[in-house]
Image (tube, rainbow, N blue to C red; front, top):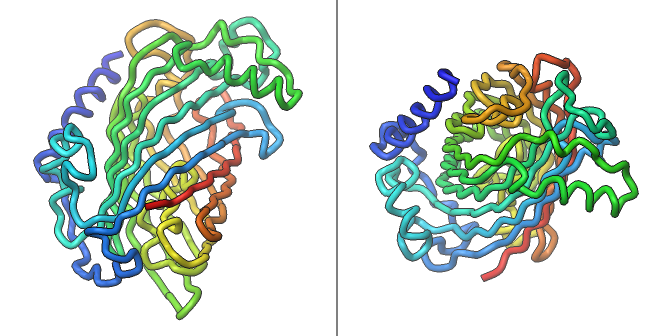
Length: 352
């Protein structure tokens, strides 16, 4: 408990750091190519994204088993203001690097999502002390984006809850009934209700790029810091991409591309790219493994060193943009060495 409380205090430090603008970094002043997105000051778009994640894509039903999300966003524009983001968000971030760095294009997205996990054997009614807990997680994630030709920054705030209030038990049983799968029987052992939060900062940097008139490729580096009761971690990764219209499609990229807005949706052309990435990091706390922060609940010993591998396709056709992704990540607990896997699909529609 002492370590977790220290990490919660650390989240406050991160907020103050961002607020004071201490986390700034050098930018690329050249954003002349923003004509790709028309006039970002007066002609920003709005978009909605539906996301579905499930390990049924990879023929499994354990660990991180299901996730759904709905995202609304808008952009690009040259600056954040009370006209394009809520007053509270503008006030909270007004002195952070995400707002103050010059010569950037910006956007914002709001995602409401539900995620869930189960132990390996979902047909056991009793508590499985040698496996991860049953857990549901529901939250609102607000992400602010700031980018130029070579660098993209993402600052996110997550506020939500874990436990029965997340309605994961009902959601999983309904899905299993619809697809004819076995019913999960151990949800009475899930972690308890608790409100949670997380502050996260992600930087995407182009290490190398080679763009032709129509097709090209690039190599991206990613650095991620998160602090909160949901999870606290330091992570890094690389991703290789190949396709068309690559100049600005790094704007919303992450190794969990299916959980972000598809930036190709902003283009008037029908474009695509393929990607593959690797990531690794040090995880200090994870409520879905550690159990509740302030009350006793089922938990498992956390594996602090974790890694992930992901590959997928992103494309746009007329007014719709799509992402399909397959991901595998190392066990989040020392109880097992088995990797977890899931597939995901998202659909984005852009409009004025």
